Length: 490
Ligand code: FRU
Image 1: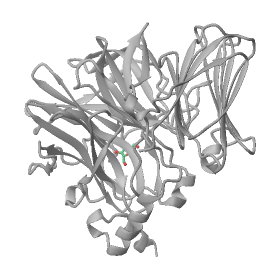
Image 2: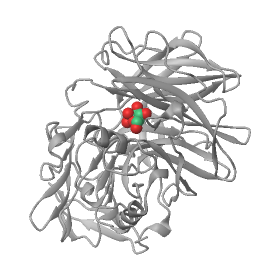
Image 3: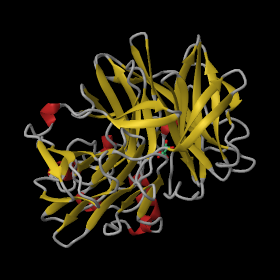
C-alpha cells in the first residue's frame, strides 16, 4: 500500500489517463471558492511562485504545481503569462521532472533575463529512501514560449560539503561581470538554516563561495532551514528576503507555522556579508510564504507570494488548493519596506463606483465576494471593517489608533484545524497614526494593505454559501469616504 501511494505521488502529468483528464476538467469548471484575480491551480496543489520575470514584452510567472492531488507530490513548473499581472494565460507544465537529476520534483527557483533570453534556474529534487539530494538546474525560456532544459544539467551536481541535502531555491544576481547564485540551505553540523552563495562568469559553471553572513544577531538561530532566498534593489537599497523554517514566535511576530523575513541593508559580495539596517516580518497575516520578486521591469520591483498553508483547506473537496497573492509593488520609506497592491485595470472593476459617505456605521449587502474597498479615515480614530454572513460569522479587521494596534480576527473561520493551533488573531503595533486601508477580497482570500502598504495582512478565508455583508464602523461620527468596487465577472 505504502509503495503504491509513493509511486502515485511521484508521477508526472505525462502519465495522466483519460479518466484523469475528465476529472481535471470537472475540477477546472467548478467555481466554488475560486478567486477571480488571484492565481489558483486548475487542479491539484499550488505552492511557491517561480521564475517571475518580464520577458519578450509580457510578464511570465511559474508556480510549483502537483497536478494529481491536493497534497505535496511531484512538483512541476506551471507556466502563465500576462500583460497586466491580473489576467493570466495558463500554458501548462513547462518544467516536467522526467530526468534522473530531478526524479522527485522540479523544485523552486527564479528567472534571470539577459541578452534576449530568460534562464530559469531551479532545483532538481532527488530522494533515495530517507536520503535527499539536490541538483541545481537551468532551463531556457524562448521567445516562442517554449522551455528547453539545458544539456549541461545539472549545472551544480549534489550539495556541498558541510550541508545536508536541503540546498535549494536558486536566485541569480549579477554584480559587475559576475553572477551570484543564492541558495537556501541547512548546515550539516548543527542542522540550522543558512543562505549559501555560488559564483559564475557564464551562468553554467558555478563555484561555491561560502555562506552569506547576515548580521541580525540571534533572531533566526533557531531556524532549521532557510527557504527561497531573494535579493533585489529597492529605492537604492538592497533587500534580502527569505523564509526561515522553525523559528519561534516573538511577541506579535512569527505567529505562523511558516514565516517570512525581509532585511534592508547592503550586500558585500567580497566578504559575503549582508549588513542589516532594518528587518521585520514581511506580512502580518496568516497565509503568506515563499515570496518571489521581479525586478527586471525597471522602476517597479514587484513581489508575489504563495498564499497558503500546509494544512487542510475547504477547497480540497473541489480538487484544488492554495492560491498566489496579488502582485505588490515594493518601495522603501523611512527604512521600512512597503508593499502596495499593484493597480487593477479599471476594465476589471465595476465601472459604477460606489462612494460611501459613512457617519458611524454602514452595512452593505455584498453583490459578490470579489471586491476592492478603499477607505480614507484620516478624520477618524478607530475603525472596524467586518465581512459577515447570515449566521453572524465575522471576518474582522480593526484599526485602533488609541491603543496603536491593527488586528485581524478570523476566529469564526477556523477552517483549518491543523493551523488553528497557531491561533486565529494577528495583530501589529502602530508606530504612527493609521489613516487609510485597502482591502482586496477575492472569494477565499483577503489582503489588507494599511497606509499604502506599510503593514499588510494576507489571509485565506472560506465563507459560507449565502448572503455576505460588509460593515464599516467608526466609534465617533465623522465623514469618511470609502470606495467599493466589484471585480467584473471574468
Ligand atoms: C517552499 C518549498 C521550497 C521548495 C518547494 C517545493 O515552500 O519548500 O523550498 O523548493 O517548496 O515545492
